[in-house]
Image (cartoon, rainbow, N blue to C red; front, side, top):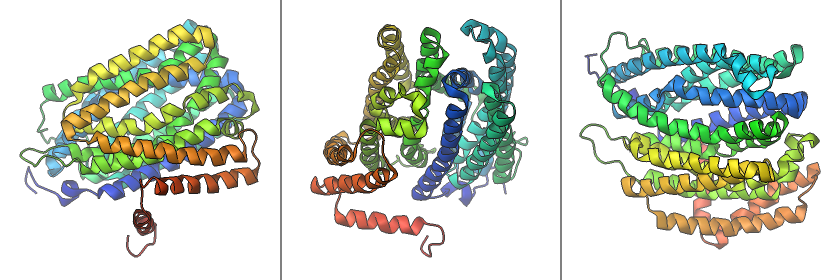
Length: 506
């Protein structure tokens, strides 16, 4: 192979459908592991100890920003643009990985060293060792994030599936073992550290195998110079930083204003919400790289994005309405009776469930299109609005203020990014508005079925009836509003069967 040798593996990657399936499969698998960890911890630790763990988790989530410096997303953009050239991909990955390792190591060491002052600042001495454990987990998590973004960029999410599922399995087993033996929030944090340490090692091995070269570049020069790489990374760093602050600021402010127990009551239902955004994230990871335009290549088509947005509106509307109607039985089933105050939080987060599914699909394509700088003011204003609402309302109405601030601010975030997709990528908003209206009408029919079954404590029979009748009512509503047709349902069923393992047509 010459210095600019091409590779079918990198030029084509897997299909959008297969990548979406593997992305969703990875998310659903890890969701099952994460749900098991969350349910185990909230019941084993209780609101006070779980609140300490949640604070350490939020602190680590903020620290991951400088440990990445936007390198993962910047690398993904340039890798996607050069994915038809193996040596160019190796060069970009090597450049980005060197930046990533240096930044990650510095931040993890600093977080470990500052754990005691951080705990003292919160007035919670027992926060010290959970923060130190999270500092170690941070380095592994950041490295895994970088490698996974590379798999997304070259459209090889089958490899990413193996990575994230393996890490999740190790994290679950180590967390349960350490909490049972050592107990407390520190045991849970060290379990997370063990999982991500394993994940980082596996990530490097898988990346080396896929590239058939050292991930550090092996002496191959990057087609992208350090300065433009860092320039784009800075814009993405600001965006990712603002988004991470947005996702964690509610827990941090509630913890500082109302205490660790209140942070636990808010954080526990919030930890359930990301699972419901997985369809959107899976579709975004499959569709977004198509928005990258290689040198001299044709303009990317907006049709994959248009079709994915329509599908997501249908799916996320159903999930949001289900959360709003059955918030109480969901909290009792997953978190237990000690989290009764979390019911109102989960119900108030229903709009966020809808928006969080749409968010990655309207934001990631902008990154790959090379227009991330246009996202910066949107991200900053989103965080500012959320903080203003939190600071004003938390002392007045308690933990539900965090949910209200999140809903209002995120509506701006998704709406503004939708407009960017319209102006930059040609996304047609009119048909999507019609889909949203029809989906809401259909979801209203499903909600009536759920209310008829009950909205308090549900028996096993009630859960089975709801899981069967409500989706049937929703599909019937979609048919009645003509948002979907019988032919479309049949085609979808046939494609789903073809993707099942063992299918002769897959």
